[in-house]
Length: 116
Figure 1 (tube, rainbow, N blue to C red):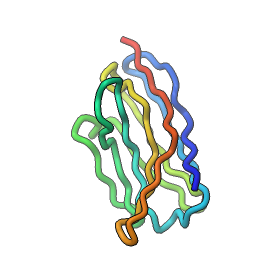
Figure 2 (cartoon, helix red, strand yellow; figure 1 turned 45 degrees about the vertical axis):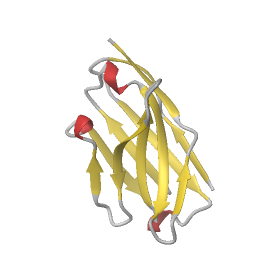
Figure 3 (cartoon, rainbow, N blue to C red; figure 1 turned 135 degrees about the horizontal axis):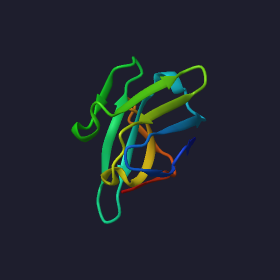
Figure 4 (cartoon, rainbow, N blue to C red; figure 1 turned 30 degrees about the horizontal axis):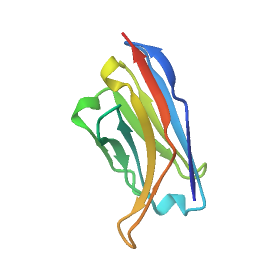
């Protein structure tokens, strides 16, 4: 199983970035997908999730600014991030999971740095 995230980088406050995560080795369409982030010295936190059926959920801190979407044919999940602020600086990780039978996979992460 591989979850290859890309699209991170350095952006000024107020700017936008789009992350992509391409999955291989899993039946993508039946997995729930998500983005999480971890800032230095902090725990990994949920950013946004999208179920296999397309239902989405967002952390309060990103609601209205970030949009998660998926392309099942391309086995890719996206995260469009707008109005970025320094507080969004973190390593962003892609996740794929199925509650039953309890599989859970993580990608290696992509760094997002927002300068003030």
